[in-house]
Amino acid sequence: MTAEPYRDTSVTAERSKEQIRRALRAVGARAMQLEEEWADGATTSCLVRFVYPTEDGAMMRVRFQATPLPPEKGARGGWKTSPEQREKQAWRGLAWYIDSLAKAAAFGFVRFEEVFLAYFEDADGRTIGEALVPQISSGKLALPRGAT
Image 1 (cartoon, helix red, strand yellow):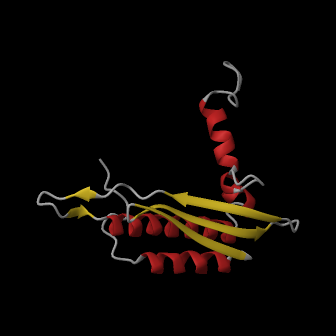
Image 2 (cartoon, one colour):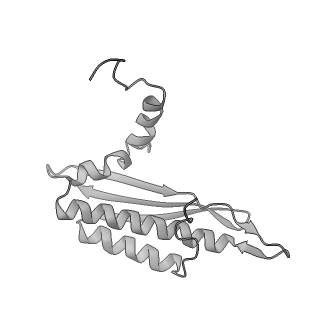
Image 3 (cartoon, one colour):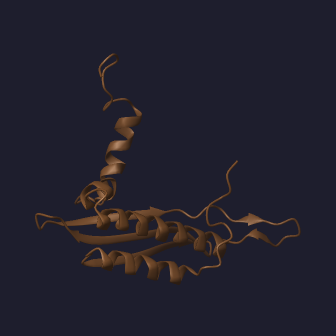
């Protein structure tokens, strides 16, 4: 089994948010919004939205969301992995993921629109990925058997 990514990070959530901010500014994003949702004193959702101008000048809304893993109780009533650590872990994962995708687009490996396509938001706030993944999973977008 592989190690859980960023489980032991000492990087604060604020530092990860600043890394996201720098990465998006560097690739020309026009606006950015960071959001958190809370329940029972813990962060339940970490959200990054930004606006990016495409090559033809259209403004695309892009959304990434991470759900922190559940905290883990320790053997003596303390935390093995605290809610705060889970929040730091989620923001760290988002920071590195967005940073690496932005750099891939900036370097020219793939066009920005292709890198971020699954995360483009429609007017209802649903991403292209949220709309298409269920269709892929159900086989609606699959090639017919025997087709190549």
